Amino acid sequence: MPGKEKATSGEVSIYKFYKMDNDKLSRGRRECPRCGKGVFMAEHKNRSTCGKCGFTEFKRSDDSKKEANKT
Image 1 (cartoon, rainbow, N blue to C red):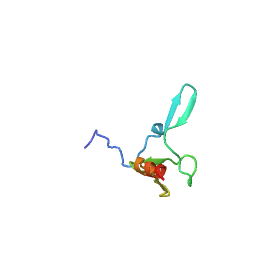
Image 2 (tube, helix red, strand yellow; image 1 turned 90 degrees about the vertical axis):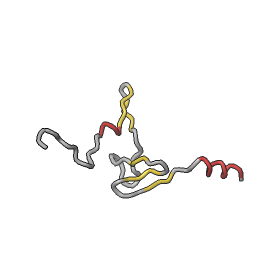
Image 3 (spheres, one colour; image 1 turned 60 degrees about the vertical axis):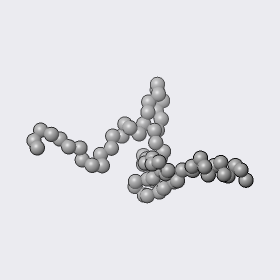
Image 4 (spheres, rainbow, N blue to C red; image 1 turned 90 degrees about the horizontal axis):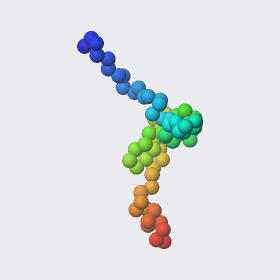
């Protein structure tokens, strides 16, 4: 349809990854330990994943922390 522009899939707005507090810049998401600076990891419910290299870190649930403290 003429006149309507559709965003292509895969476009990411880089401003979503950083936050400005006064004169200080902070990163909003975690960076990949393998790929280095500038490559951010996706936040899922139970894990963090790098879209570039596939590195995955699983988050601990509260139940496993409670069980570890009991022993």
